[in-house]
Image 1 (tube, rainbow, N blue to C red):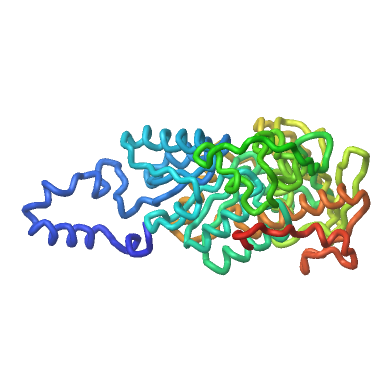
Image 2: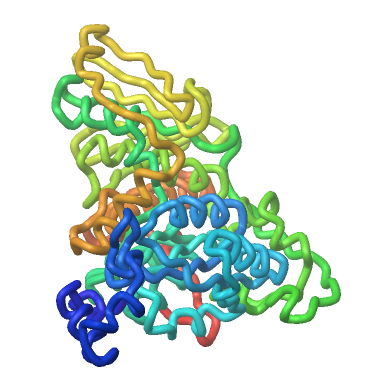
Length: 427
């Protein structure tokens, strides 16, 4: 649905169709009720044309959530892996009971389509920023999976690009749309916990840090089976090895992801930042607290951000502590709060994993309002994770300037803010 189509209201649609058909008498034979939005159907002029880029584990789940919305028309799927590409096309065709979904290897072919208004980006972490920037340049809105970057410079470029091209960007930090997390964050934001003292964010594993292992060369598959160049994206070139693109391997490889801290921190640090109304900043001092790479970071306000293992209530839990009370919750939906009287403030519904988040994004595509998880907020949250990783990697405390987005008088740390992009990709 491009801009011209958005402007085509029902009256103009009818007028145009009638004229082409030779008069009102032809109307019943030409326009089914579904085309007009009758009987609960969504009129074509109100549908959002979409493409899916990346149909792995998260891609399957996210695309399923989008397909559940009647005002979405999924038109294309792109994936560098042939098996995933065909599975994605098959899922769309099965839903619509036709063979119309197009399958692409190269994202640029999908992004060139004028009938695609928005894209789901669910590639591996390595390609999130690059695809988001290319999508914005192509005039698309996007729902982009987390973490949004591999380096601080990448997510800064993503946020700046969204502003430059006036795009709607929803980061896949869906806990901002999940009831118990919203309730916990709102307790902190409302002042009902008193003056905030510390926020605790769970990391994925007990250890922290990333590795940069180089694997031996294996025969490279045909491009239709595995587009190795496309999978690498902007990362430096290396000969093919199938282990690289196995998620359990690349998730902790520093060229492709941010390891334990970024994997869950992109959610948990994000909720902590949101609870502190810190979507435009991040902590200024970082240090490790033990040999497992747990982090204590300090905001300019004095509030502590503690990234560690050992919180309760399922995956991605957080704990928010103020001078008058605290709350802890996680993906299980369970929570504990002190004082108990704060339970009277509990007002929330479910919606996990991503249904509410997807719906909110679609509403924002239509209204042009900024979503609950915009690019700048996601950039600031993942920046705190990246600075934490740099602290662990250097083995010493670091200071961070969230205004200039640099490490003051620390060239060793500043070299890790960005990475070189491989031709033809650019920030």
